[in-house]
Image (cartoon, rainbow, N blue to C red; front, side):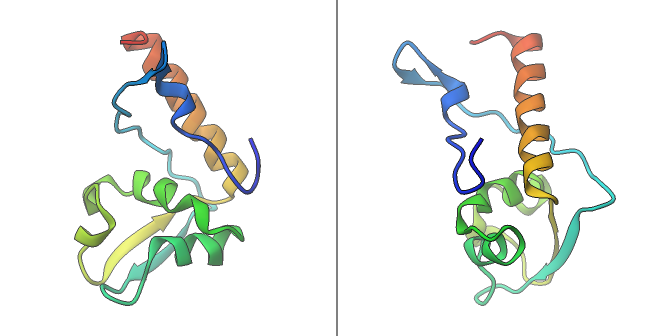
Length: 108
């Protein structure tokens, strides 16, 4: 896993086509960070850049906040957004959740 990029879709490619990426729980850690999302001001790529040094992990932040919705533009104003931290540990958590999903449900 690169610090600058993770092809999160690679885990859901089967025979050249992609399967639906399931909602996966990113475990809460004591090191996670929290910010209030300001609608029209905050952007997940900026939050990612500020916390991880890369704008490419907004998807991970959104994945860690399922009650915020599945689209950045639907995040409510002043929503307390959890930023999974540190990045490498959080990406490993994500990969572990994928492995568990596939163990339980198969490749589908």
